[in-house]
Amino acid sequence: MSLLELHSVSKRFGGLLANQEVSFTVDAGQIVGLIGPNGAGKTTAFNCVAGYYTPSSGRIDLDGRTISGLSPEACARAGVGRTFQVARTFTSMTACENVMAGALLHERRVAAARATALKWLAFVNLERFADKPAGSMTISEQRRLAVARALAIAPKLLLMDEVMAGLNPSEVQEMVSVVKRIRDSGVACLIVEHVLEGIMPIADKIVVLDRGVKIADGTPAQVSRDPAVIAAYLGDV
Amino acid sequence: MSALKITVGLALAAALLPFATNNPTHLNLAILVLMAAQLGVAWNLLGGYAGQVSLGHAAFYGLGAYASTMLLLNFGINPWLGMLLGGLTAAGLSFLFGWSCFRLKGHYFAMATIAVAELVQIVFTNWDYAGSAVGLTIPMSGQGWGAMVFAEKAPYYWLALGLLVLTLAATLAVERSHVGYYLRAIKDEPDAARSIGIDIARYKQIALSLSAFFTALGGSLYAQKELYIDPASVLGTGLSIKMALVSILGGVGTLFGPVVGAVVLTVIEEATRVAFGGTGRGTDTIIYAGLIVVIAVFYPNGLLGWLRQRRAHGRAQRASLAQEAAR
Image 1: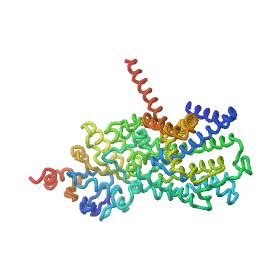
Image 2: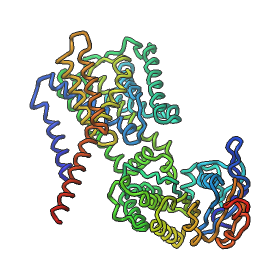
Image 3: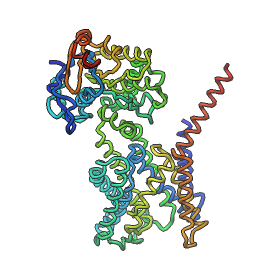
Image 4: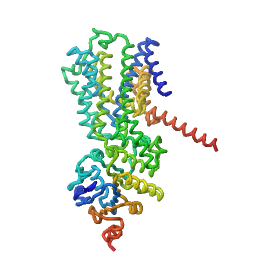
């Protein structure tokens, strides 16, 4: 049994089939990249796992328990952490308070939540911002802050939606090292990503979607040689 | 620590005010300030911290006023107990209020709250048992602390001050607990709040229930002070707007913002009435409204928000000056 299992998940928006019979798994301790051209249905699949969408058909299991159809907050409590394409920082709070808001899920005492939050801030190299207004941080810092906030709920699986998009090369490297540390701490990562040079070297597995359908699933080396993937990215040649 | 000392000092000075003046006009103005501040602080729990702007809070104020008064008149229930029961009634009915209004967001939420408050006002205007449009009168017969009826102003002043302190203490407790963090998270980014396991509907309702409870206590106090209530005086839309204004002008989502807003707003309101009222042309209301617009334009974050910005700006300037000097 894998940590996360998608069983023939389809999601329909009116006449548009955004995901069609998508199945894949994420094992505990794995980094899995979910890639594909624009409009492939990556974020839709992601939102189904995190509870923001209910699949039209199919089933999603986390750790043997069905989570498809649960609300986002119930998915979070079941062990799914997530970040968004835009950081969605709590801008009225300091960096530490942002992470505390996550830590408070399991630890209702504010002082204890603060201690946990400081630990996660250090984990993403943001401890120096602890008592600074979160809204004043750069995009790259806010992305890592969002990761720390999601980690603070002690998830089994962390979903990251384009955490590397728009970052400069050194910021991408910083994020890559954060992702590796997350995996090493025992939390599985499912990453939607456009920045392939960021995800390919660190992923244990890559799942490729195109027009809502899974077209490939394997190690980065296998997937990058797959003719269907090359066709999807470069057009039929 | 110094902020705490200042707060305690101000509270003590406020408690001793009735010994400094026995001019009933001054005391009455002070009572109006305290009561407006208490309502603003109660409104702020939902409108400021949770960011759900209600323009229907007069419904809870009226429920508190009517509950304690009707319990007293019909069942002889002591107003102290009546006040508590009124607060609990409002908190209970706030679930219906939340159930109907929280389906909507932003401006539509605000509009729905107006509609619900109008509904409550119409019910009380036509409900004979509640005195309908004529209203209800509390007899002056039993006086003193037990009956919460007094001939002089000072006891009402202390009651209003006590209620304000109680509401501030409750707000501080919320602000410092996980609920305070959750409310701010919901206000800032509701989707992100859900992603960290926050049940948004539940916490909005907690804020609403607390806010309704304390607003209703204010309504009961009003009834005991004026000894007369009718739908226009305790359920009017103007009241709902005043509660929001006090909080917004003072600074939403801050503990003392509504207190600052209440002082400024009530003093402007009374001063313009004294200076320009009685002409029958509404000059005082026009000037009052004009000053509100001026504050809203020049201090978009509220008076307390403006003060904080100035302090932060001053700190930043001093820091850069220190850096210059070091170089």
